[in-house]
Length: 339
Image (tube, rainbow, N blue to C red; front, top):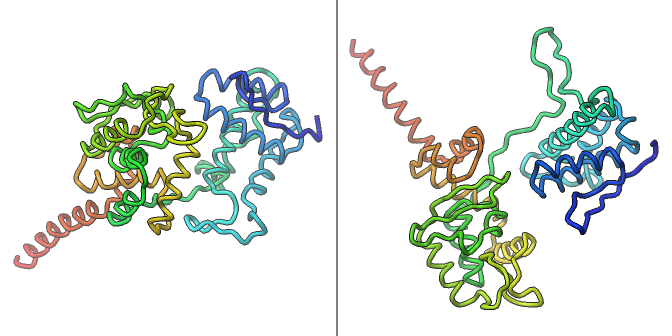
């Protein structure tokens, strides 16, 4: 099937997306049976990108094609004049390329199990120079710390918001560390004002949790529900559109991003994304002495290794630990000098 180019078709009947190839579409059906819709969509898009570069069907793909795909993905974009400030790279981020390789490896693992191909062309890594040493990864992803907002920046952002609804959504991320999808997925029955907690029914990966949120948020959301939320809204989602033809319908991710972009511009901030608000909350909790396991539970991380990044962001914690250690070392050095 040389020369084939995929076409992403988002099914309106609620089924998984299709790419126009029997084997790829079968894999998307398999993924849809075990993963969340966003994961299925991301998988379909990654496969579309990869097979657009390959220009052939999965049976014809070789390891050489995969290595050429990596090189193409890491090539500079837009003529080479755009560089990301986060990691000083011109091509796609290493994390994105690694994710697409994982998607390809999953596809070919499925096809091997089904007997459609004999081997997975996506290598796990390159051979080390010396026998017995670990192999070299195909893509090395740099570990960068997420950006957070300073207290003055957070205050300026909150003041720039125009409705109680918008303030309540930002407070959920800034005071409760909720993800954007968790804020938008919140339902009226998920609010526990008497306990100052919220129930996250649609967390990342389908995982649920109950987390505390500051009383300030419940005051804000109460004002929004009483004064702003349309009484005729035909959804139990907490946050809905307030004006226009979609009035009373659930607010979309694009809608929340547009609200935040506008507030950020009015506040004169260079950065303030939804995820940065979440990072800011978790960092401040760690700085205040919250146990790492508790930060993990608040964040909804499946692995505590993901939570350890906040040890590096919480400067006060690191400085305090260093000073306590140095006090001990200085005391030991003093005793040794006296002797």
